[in-house]
Image 1 (cartoon, one colour):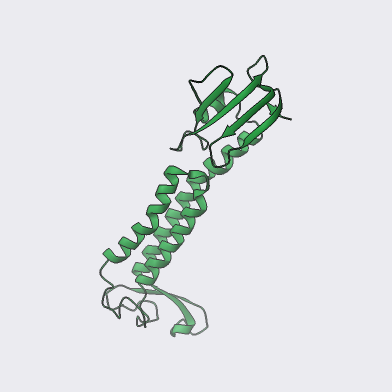
Image 2: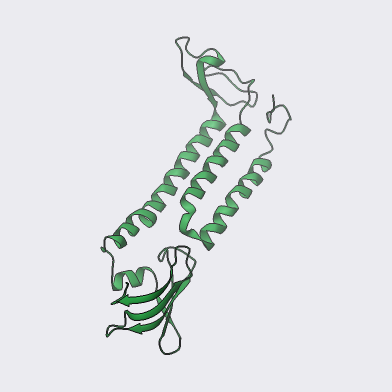
Amino acid sequence: DITTTRFGIRTIWGIPAAITVALVLPAVIQTVSHPEHTFTFWVSTEIYTYCLWMAWWYNPLDPHFTGSTTNLGSTVYCLPLTGDGGVTANGAICLNEEQITCSIAFLVILGVTIVLYLPHRVILPCMVYYKCLKGKGLVWWRSVQKLESETGTFHYTYKPSGRLSFAREEFMYVGEVDGKGRPHGEGVWYDTSFHGECLRGQWIHGRPQ
């Protein structure tokens, strides 16, 4: 019986709240600094936090039938799994009011996370890949800004994840160009972003050979 009820700390919310902050803080830091792969990080963090709070409010001594009351005064609700109406602990899945509130909050937060990341991580990358967003539109979306550089060197800063992100990275090309300013001939390209490339060799009108 390793539960919060046994140790008498079930009503001390500061303990799970502090652990929640410790779980969420790394996700926030990574989102600000390197947002490329934060979706799975956030989902896993939300799942861990949900399990933490569900375990915190769990009490094996709570009655296992709908309408009963826990030792904290909350109502128990059960989903019967057998024909006995869920009277026994093995015949139903039972949650108290705190666990139900926790489950609703988890589903809402998970839904918001998916809604926020779908346009940013799925729709927009597909638009870029299939060239639905290109030219000035792509330059605006990635907030491309030219930096001062020597002749023959093209140095820029940009947001790899678009205007909704915080981090900026740099890319540079040193070498020959064509009449439109695109890499053409011998040249070197490097990009400091998470998925950035370092390329050296021949270029043909903006594309590596």
